[in-house]
Amino acid sequence: MHKYILRRLLMLIPVMLGVSFIVFTMMYITPGDPARIMLGESAPTEEVEKFREELGLNDPFFFQYGRFVKNLVIHQDIGRSYTSKRPVTIEILSRFPNTLKLATLGIVVAVVLGIPTGIISATKQYSIFDNAAMVAALLGVSMPNFWQGLMLILLFSVHLGWLPSSGFSSYKEMILPALTLGTSSAAIITRMTRSSMLEVIRQDYIRTARAKGQTESVVINRHALKNALIPIVTVIGLQFGYLLGGAVLTESIFGISGVGRLMVESINARNFPVVQGGVLFIALTFSIVNLMVDILYSFLDPRIKSQYK
Image 1 (cartoon, rainbow, N blue to C red):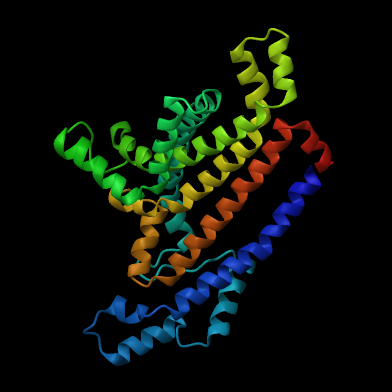
Image 2 (spheres, rainbow, N blue to C red):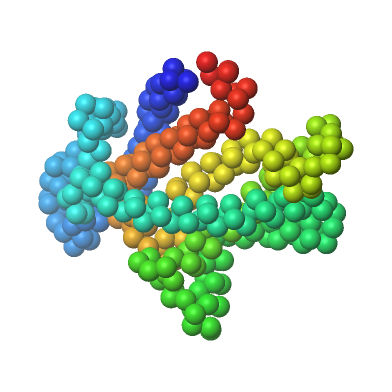
């Protein structure tokens, strides 16, 4: 197990290098001059050119990328924000708790709604509940987060006045963002749970458990669900990583000071170091979540643990 974890951690190095090269290239070819944006349109050309020289923006592409990788590997320095002059690491880490809290609440909503609905749909296949759940899941997958967030604000904040429309400091302020972010993931988890459970409950050992006189709840919860968890846990892990990186629109709509909103502001300001650092940080977090899911497999299925050995 330890060798497997170490090997997976070493595999992060080429992954992060690839991500850094792609995002650096995209920001390099993006139209717009960071120096001009920061100094203003009325700034003299001489000052803009001097500022570009200070930022190193006049250097060739590969020289800039090599300097970025060198600082990242040797000094663990992603750079400094063009606007605040603070280290990018501090900028990201100061916003990450809100993003992590939002993603955690979203995945909790998704799991609480998705797994029970999927189990009931599988055990009552082609029933009215099953058909309604699949239609709701299809709507949840198809509905854009930004549109759903706006509709929730109009309903619960503007018309009913039950919940605040922005902020993230109190429990009431967390409800609408968590619902907005969690419902689409709940739809995906519902569909995967139903599919996995339908495959398991048709197995011979399920019929044997019923023939031995086990109650239906014991058969479903102890025998069927336990053996159907591998693909469900995989989807939950992927969705959690997606929520960590995909909360950009949700944070912007509800005015949450998170990594996603920071990246949107940085893209508009051509603040390249913050954008690059944010993408690298999200990619690293996503990879760590996937590693944790793989480790969790060994606790769910002893056969997988023996393969690690």
